[in-house]
Figure 1: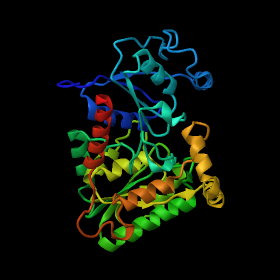
Figure 2 (figure 1 turned 60 degrees about the vertical axis):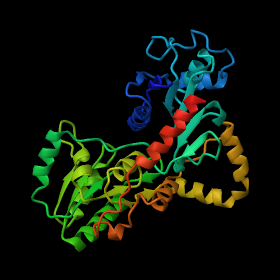
Figure 3 (figure 1 turned 180 degrees about the vertical axis):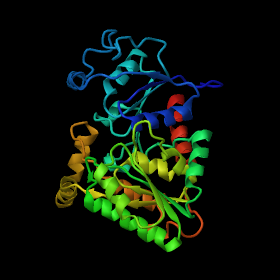
Figure 4 (figure 1 turned 45 degrees about the vertical axis):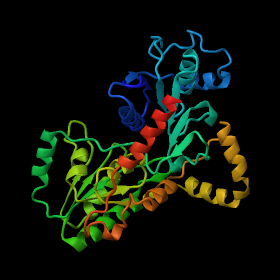
Length: 357
């Protein structure tokens, strides 16, 4: 380890947000991580999980999803996100003679003891463990706009009065619905915020933003504004508005988008969408059965229980840690925004200590 970077394999995830986190974490450890592309189909993942590691890391079992083989020299570190690559990562570690360390981001969908380190966030509700770190936010950093894109959008926005509010929209998710009521709430919040300051708003939709919701917001905004949906072959101002806005307002459905906004160095406010009935009922049920919390935590640690996501838990943690600004004061006064250096340093030190163990 001394004098050189550790070798790192990144087993790519199906999700763009997960891959962005993996890219961030890998970049903290080495300038040249090796990405292993492809992933097993779900039926193979389920089969492997049921069989477990009973047959050992034979060469056949080390076949990667794209038909090639994982082969030595084995890396110092394997990074995965979620449960899709758990078995492959464990087999690589076994093939290395237990030298390779395995770090999982998010929730592993497996016994927590299978991993050398788990880096998670509050919405997954994983129990405390020695090999687990719970961050305020995911490791998603804001995408950097190219110089050309930044210049283009500076020209597009130059006629808009300051302060400029960037409004970042998500969409329907497992926890939220972006319906008419939610669209009205977003538009009302924008009108109130910008109306008090005499500024303007740039609204940016995502691939998940319902067309009706975006159209409803556009009709209801009464302050100077631009509204941009995410359309194919159309210029996308998302990365640029993260840099050009004076403050950001984000819908609470996407942990990745919230993290990108919070680490952009701007004040960030949160506007809630309509929480799904099952999410509300799940939280009420947990409150009524709080005496079973120890049992569910033990089952989760053994990989026998998967807690439902709780996005409000993530929002509360982000607010308590100073990542979020009270919405009423979002466009007033100097920025109190935080930067990600401390949590990034914390995770880097934890992983490097793991490798030196």
